[in-house]
Image (cartoon, rainbow, N blue to C red):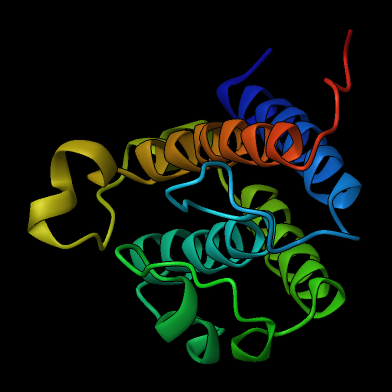
Length: 165
């Protein structure tokens, strides 16, 4: 298996895990994982979408995020709110996620293994984590899995049992 094949497999696995959890919360997308708040499923979906565009469009391609309208609500450092009027719908965000994921996979198809070692356009402060094209894709492979844990906690807060028992 090549590194690019591994990245594609990891992106698919993390997508299936995270989106399965998020889709299961489509009837309660603003459920926060703790009594003290936290990242609800709708915010997680918007954040994953916004972040993947930051990584692909910004850090890898050196272009602006294709979803500037999502930055104020979902960029790193934003705080989720339980106010539904502040957010796009789950369906709108899912469509945007599918758009960026298709672009990510299409771009991977244009790369060679050597391209993964090329420097990224990441800001200097992100260099240790995202300094190469390959490191950016590596970050993508774990990001949605990281946030899937928050959605799993939101599911429990909503009174739902584990999906895999």
